[in-house]
Length: 505
Ligand SMILES: [Zn+2]
Image 1: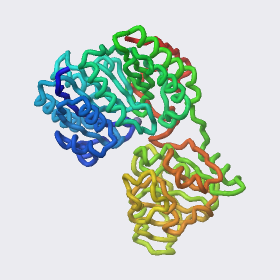
Image 2: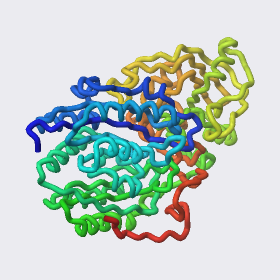
Image 3: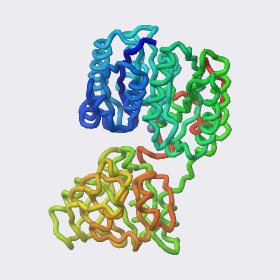
Image 4: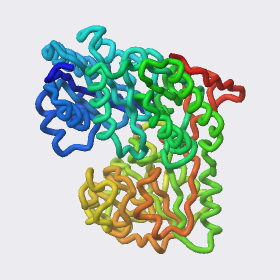
């Protein structure tokens, strides 16, 4: 290794929900995360991101760091070609300006889809490779929700994925990428990867690393990583909401020049997923049954979880399936929050105590049910700004300790409270309800549009929790999506699926 190896660092990060109707634009990247050149190094000082770990690891190698471009945007719809081209041109120009380089570190997601490419990140690696040449090692960090094509395994020298979900080790894995690059540059290892791609789709709800099936896979992966012949093990859960030919679970094992061993370990890990695949299946309760169960509960509140409309996962927070079920069953003391700026604007023309008829919900797209016509009475108006009850909430990094829902209206339809808000806000704090006067503890049932984020605030008061099978872009019921590109047959959508765990080196 040269005394001061020249290491180019960069990344592109997007988890693409190909069924979401709104495209991801260059404006989304600019507004959320776009760092160029030295900004990447400055930002890394107090960041726990993957690229920050790469910078720290490169510094530990005594490297000269050549920061290029890092761009990321929140999970959303397909990335516009214009956005990808703009970002890629910038990245490649900066890589070219960094030449000569001894190694490259890239922080990618693995589930980015653009208008014209179902394997956008492999394209990125290929184009970087074209600039730096065949002999310069490229080590790539991936989110464990990436859908990995065989081409990606070939294109990069080493792939290193997060080991945790929720993702708390992005920095550590980025650091590990730099360490591995250092070993390659010192001539200590010749990385050789094998992979198994399984015809298994995991809903995002089934990809927690503390839960089966992934917990068991990671337990074994940690043992395998102790083997001195092993360089890296990546357990890729895949991202079921990206419709591509290689969407699904993949296992990638990199050894030091030992393809047979890499193949053996990748196959062994794949077999664990196959054996435990049934543990990933969600239990489905219809909203109608969930509301009936909640009404029959001796006491409340029963929390009705609408994870298909998970605001934290990018859904609009205006799904109506649960509201319709409450109305159909004439539920009493039921509460739901709907983000619906149009309905708020209509209510704003009225006064406290007025009765009006209007359509609420399901306006953002066609995935979250149909608008529901209701006739109700306006109980209260608010600016929707309340201090949080929980000081160190899950979303403090985004929202601080103040909830800002925009103009908010409490509409009452017989036994049901609808809180109409201008902006969508994940249900992470009870002040969202209490602020305007709805007492959560007095409700028989409360609908939360969240997969996990509701727990800190709602579990202390919950008498029972029921997960509903509702319409929405974040549904765990993958049978609701009209896949077109997915390789079939695949579990759990198809009846006859053959599972080969043979690794490809
Ligand atoms: Zn992820």
